[in-house]
Length: 261
Image (cartoon, rainbow, N blue to C red):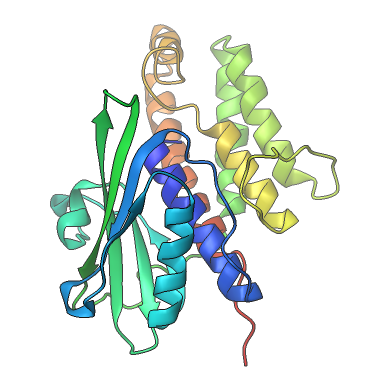
């Protein structure tokens, strides 16, 4: 998972938990960040919250809650030719959507700049107004059955092209979801989630082997092509990407629901 997306997802999960429980937002490791800041809409007349540690995220949440934050969700963005665009967030992979007591909906888009001097990332979140919010844009459904189907088909394909390492990965992810009673080890550093969502989140993390050199997109693609299975490989790899996105959004946006008054 890309660092930008991982950070946004962690922020949203922690914020949703805090809103649901009435507690403060959980601490999170951002040791890879040299500076982080949150800037608000100009009409709020609020100074940006900035600093070097996770206390900045905690202060951002407290400020948002004071201003009337009711809910927070995570969305993916797409290029304009593919459809949905969220203003300047269209060039990014994700955004934090905030729902306010006033009925307004805004989003925080992030900009990441390498800080070579301090060997980290300078991360800036900017709140943006959002007019004409598409209805249900952040609503998600449970797609774990679809994810399991793709994982099973990919494991079988990996076996056929003699990519045993990836076959094991896909089967491991599959069995996490196939048997809800099976034992599993949830990473200590992973976000706090109810157990059912832990399984989906961990299955997504394990199955996210897409990338460049040394990934499922590298040697296995050539192995599939050599054996005349390029079409199967392309279709299933695209489906895997879709299901990783769908299930990640489901975990982040459906976890820690607020109790109805």
